Length: 238
Ligand SMILES: N[C@@H](CCC(=O)N[C@@H](CS)C(=O)NCC(=O)O)C(=O)O
Image (tube, rainbow, N blue to C red; front, side):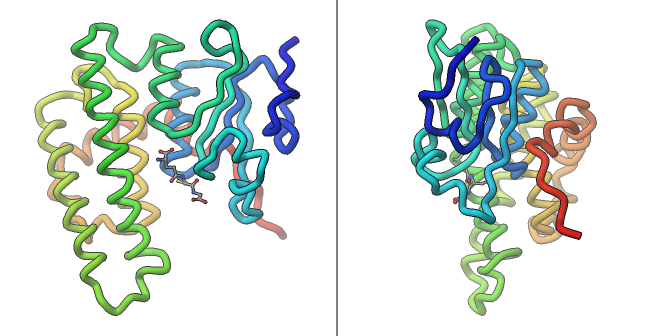
């Protein structure tokens, strides 16, 4: 039986199934990338909710595998060489799980780098920029009288959406004909921008017909539907 007791993270989040990949996450756009990936691949895993309301992301146990205090993070008891491996950063985790499962990344080198290219585009562009739109449009920044910061991020997000739209006018999915980790990284953020952030009109989402069509196809995938609510949040009191 696998023993993960040497990993401090398992003290706060005990592993009921230490032979499975341990996922530490919240169902946010970055978090669901990994739960969707795990659902798509069928790799056995055990999800654990990191309670932001209790600041669990800053506890020594969580920081022991995710020093940047951000979800998602994983602990794979059977990493390379059969040794346990922990990882943080959703892009790195997606790549690792794609290589481990040999799924959702093209096998040919050119296709593989194309998928990585669109994955990096999400990590460096879409995630950070859409996140700023969330801050200035939905969260604390919406109180700021000066709308220039908001407008800057809205404009940049709109520009990024145009890049995605053009790509999806040329190929079925971001990396080509096949659904890949690049799509798993990107579409939860687009869904969040127009859904939870309520910024669809602000970024002119109706102009991006390819984005809307492929987002709808993404959201129809059964593994995506499941992954979007993992780890489950506790029911509100009462
Ligand atoms: N680049 C990181 C970003 C992760 C990230 O921003 N996670 C947020 C939730 S979506 C978080 O954990 N925030 C908690 C905090 O900053 O304290 C990744 O893709 O994994």
